[in-house]
Image (cartoon, rainbow, N blue to C red; front, side, top):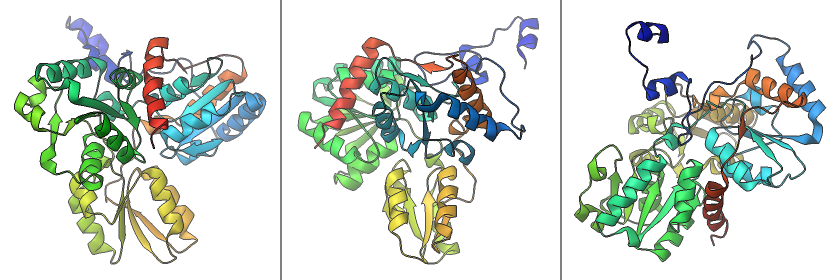
Length: 394
């Protein structure tokens, strides 16, 4: 139903409907709005030349970051590529760059703004490039969860550990309550640190990374973990369950990695004898348990680099990266396939396309600042505290 039709029926679109349509913004959520201005046509054959010209005109004033999950058409213009935290640190290491163009998603640009100087301006080519996982934990929901933990008499024993894939508000909550941030590379170290500070961990917002790290790396049992569902009264948990748990996992997940199943693993082993199954720890526990290797995006890349010629690999992570790796290692006689038969791009990562990048670079080249991502001072202070705790992990 269109907006005009709803007006004829005297029915107003809900805030959620407007968010999904990209017509409104919620500052406490990762969801953004459509970009202002006219984008170039995606069929324009001059897009590559226009991007090059604008980037050349900007020179050292611009630094373009490209996440591993970005399209090849965008990655070709990145000054550096990497995972979310590596890119945020790379941005902070380039203080001479006035503009940081982050080809990724909203929470990544927020992290870059937190870690860069006040003189630098972080730009996201499409404000609607959010993250479904980060959207699964809002500041209000997490504050309510802390009230539940307080009423159960366990809040003083709980240390929050938040995944990098979270909003600045959640990072700030974590910093304010004595917790730390983690990445998929250092989640084990972060949890070990947290259990030195307290008896329990509230892990936000990805239940799978939290569960896999606790069980696979720290030797806990599945019974040590409970899942807090923000859409149910008291998270769907009793006070007794909260008191008995060691890991309180937020009910969130990655829409891409959550698609992989045990059937995917069984199927690829049957189709490709001798295949090595390598998956990201955001996958479900049963998938991780059935895999040959588990690791972060950077781990996956390094594992394939070290793999012998003639080896076969099924990778459980975002398709843009898997395709790039397949093309890269084909010359070394390494077979790389996507773990699932179903094609699965990260839909929000894919919002950053060549037309948006061209529009962004050309606007900046004309002196027009667009799509700036700016975290308020108080949120930034507490979020930075949590990030600094991560940087100080042994």
